[in-house]
Length: 243
Ligand code: ADP
Ligand code: MG
Image (tube, rainbow, N blue to C red; front, side):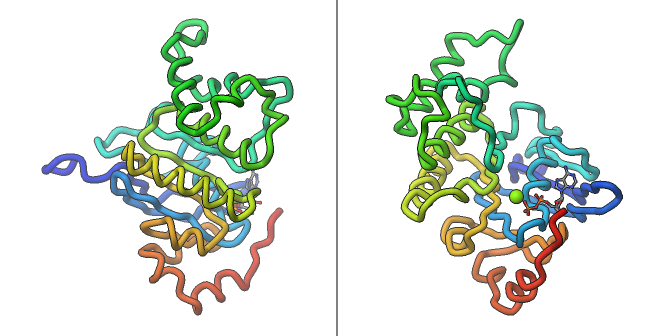
């Protein structure tokens, strides 16, 4: 820990992921301040999703990842909202959101009254109370996206990892979802790492951007520095082969 106390929420050093001998995350270093929003950008296949999945160890990685206090993140420290998750048929909104409590559940994986209260509170904050009993498969794109965010929020993790949280939405709903995340960041002090496909939205909402090219970090800094036309046209002009 820093001698003056906790100065960052998350630190990653030399994070690498390889599939079949090919590196798709190629040495990412990061230090996130508490309450910061980092936007992850880069062409399709540049490793944004894999990097987020590596942070929560859904894929094997090397390198180090630590929280502000120097600990390795445990199952409840980082909440990942995956890119287009499956919405299980037959499951209600509240049941789906409660899945986010899984890492907190105790003996026999039974939900407590507290877990249910947390889910109810999050649904209320996201304007989803009237959807609680609806089957998840009956929701519109915007509603489903909010439900998936709700599932990440009930984890009550200090760091929220969002994988393209607005990719399936029209512009109005994109702004709604991003405003919501921004509000939560301000009110709850959440630290956000979000893979973002829309560079305009990334510039508007993120404090800093990390640009990936074939898994390698090529620029990290404030949006106006990273979104440099020459750099973008070079990186985005060479689409990566997606296997
Ligand atoms: P992005 O999210 O930036 O579009 P991804 O992280 O999804 O990129 O993918 C990065 C690269 O890793 C791509 O070439 C992709 O095909 C490959 N990849 C992702 N997951 C796997 C996997 N489970 N097995 C093999 N290759 C994978
Ligand atoms: Mg992706």
